[in-house]
Image 1 (tube, rainbow, N blue to C red):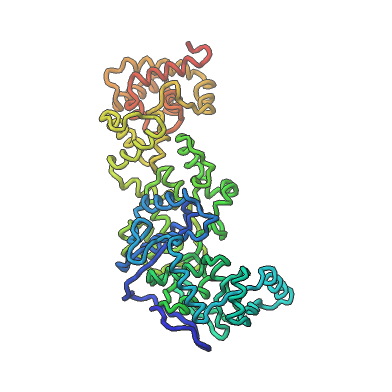
Image 2: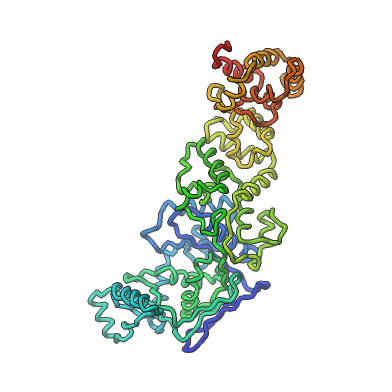
Length: 547
């Protein structure tokens, strides 16, 4: 449980956590800054907070930390909310649902920060520092050169109340610093890291408000966490260094100190480095990333979307939505980054995640994104969908690419459903419907695998004559279905003493543009007699001497 007490001389700042049944009303939060699109690492952190709240029948709060007005992007909030909604992660309090302790935008909570600052100043837990920034920097550099720990000089504490007012009246700039109790230690029992301690005598007094009175991150976060009665702060390990200051602020303000869980950052595949959108060019050379990039490039290219955009790389949630991943697969991959239920369980639905999630199973070391597992999870959950569910998703992508015009046409829907059934395991994401675009493109727009075409048709002895015979036989076939098509083509092979490999890849190339694919006979049936005949005619017409 959290700790309650004020800051006293010689006191020990300590919060103890225990991985046990939670008896309090759990309240967690995720507080993104609207400075960019939703990062996959941030989404994993949000998921862990959401799961902990749902596991304990608590409250999940989506708060927007928009205090840094110079970096905020107005257009970034929409994608953040969209990422949550797409994944099916709702919030109990948030931008559109402020709750009793709202609003959920820090930019709208300035009155709370001003009041808290005044309390800290009045109670002696904070002070106005008029020391020029250049002088502070000089002291830091001097301490570094002398290989000693820098702590604030606190010269401004020597000023009388009258002198402070004179400085303020003269317009002298100042920041507000927390007065760190140097005799204390901060001790927490982190749900993931275990016991962590900090010696306050080695800590400089942190700035908590700028010269214009606007709050800095650590201070605003503490005020909001206190006002919103946050019981558990679950966040990336990079924030561990902020914890002692935040604990001190909680205590100075008389808040109940939350429990802490600092989870490992998401590492790039095959690396211990934190995954970053700034290294996309480097990741494109990573063999483990190739499948994701190839998939994304293929799908986004058909949609006319710039695959090089920051928002549409495998580091961003928007990428997975645009490529046609389904939420269940992405969530399954996210929850397995740095957490496991046991040594065997890999596949987890969202309901199972809620039931099984615990902080004690979160690991400490960096947790890598595994593209192979991500695609494997995606494939599993895609295959759990009914044909009708797959149909609705694929229709959207086909329509966006201009391959169909009316997604509500019963004949179109029936045809696409047959293509989906034929595609089988090749359909891992909705965008994979483009991998069987031979069923949707116009005959003259069919993209040919030129290398295989040259090998198996243009330069293959007797290929043209063989294909002419196939066209003649197929055009006269009474029933253009898989069974009769199989028998007819097998008859040609027996007549000529050939093997399937002598004909089938060449025939498939002529009608689909690919040497490999789904069952050939079902492919021919679905394309239909007229389309197969036209494509054979068109292919043969491009071969010198074939006509």
